[in-house]
Amino acid sequence: MQKTGKVSGRKLTLVPLVAATCFMVSGGPYGLEELVQASGYKLAIAILFFLPLLWSLPTGLMVGELSAALPSQGGFYVWVRRALGPFWGFQEAWLSLMASVFDMGAYPTVAVLYLKHVWPQAGEGNNGVLIAASILLACLAWNLFGAKAVGDGSVLLGLLLMVPFSVITVYALFRHGIPVAATSVSAGKSDLLAAILVAMWNYMGWDNASTVAEEVENPQRTYPRVMIIALVVIMLSYIVPVAAVWSAHLPVNAWETGSWASIAGTVVGPWLGLAVVAGALVSTAGILNSLTMSYSRLPVAMAEDGYLPRAFTLKLGNGAPWFAIVVCGLAWGLSLKLSFDRLIMLDILLYGASLVLEFVALVVLRIHEPELPRPFRVPGGLPVAVLLGMGPAALLVVALIKNRNEHLGHFSTLTLGLAMAAAGVVCYFAAAHARTRRRPSGLKS
Image (tube, rainbow, N blue to C red; front, top):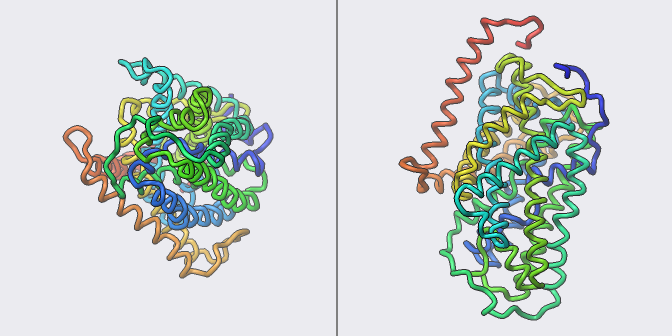
């Protein structure tokens, strides 16, 4: 094992990074069911088309510029620290890591919901938690083989998970109708805010790709291309299957989390329902793989700056930060008992706050470091850079409103989220005090 040094293996190139980014953001149409259920087909497709123009495209452009200008391990943590100072850099990392606790719990939770469609015992007792924990553990182990292994695996997993949805799309487009009697799910209550929140969750995570910049081939050129290609791929992977099922006249009340399996069985046949469940497991593995690669680099960058113990910089010969992977994995396991709805609400709230800091960093760096080499620059000058963050900030307000009315135990999810964010302030001063006392040689200021 090694503590520092260059990665000895091959680096991530365009296609593997596109695949890994798609998994960091999406992982296929799994999880869209509540969006359709809450808003209906027409509004769901409109949300899937227009929301990324306000939420994903601005973020992708921001990530493209800052990743090309500052391609460093730690990505967005490094950007905010450079633009706003160590306090806000720490808050950026803290908010992202806290969001990851709920983010990494949501995906295996969705996988278990799908598994229940073919194996009801998956939802009994602690079976669901044990299954989710096993999937998470397998992905932590995969990450120990390094970023290149994760990127290459993402290409294969991405192709596999989209096969069942391609079959659903083709069958649905060429069938003239689905018998209403074939569905048995009760109608849900229309909830526009819930629909937008689900769509935001399915379109977020673009900045996660930035934390592995040191392990990317020619990052200045690669990142801007990755952002655009991945956005187009993800939009199509969402809109096309939903529109195809709509064309087959499947009732809206057939949709609920995990129901792609039953929809596949209704449109095509039971064999495809099984394939969709298998695809859900593949999707979960791809997402957790890519996000483990991303999130585990944050503690490494913080430790190199002296805000976490040096043990977090321990790496294997292939560059995998094994200590950070293990510690993050233990934290992620804590959220596996929460419901899907609660997980995504807390995830979006904390992630949204960190995203606002990144847009502020974009503007501040434009003002204070105008001569910083920017191989890719968001067009339109400073006014456009300012306007770029307005859409995501407005959508964060939507998340705040929704979280205010939802509860986890005796507390609203908004209160819990704000408490977790406030804890970052306390942790910063504790870490800064410990850092001052240690003062290791060569530490960054």
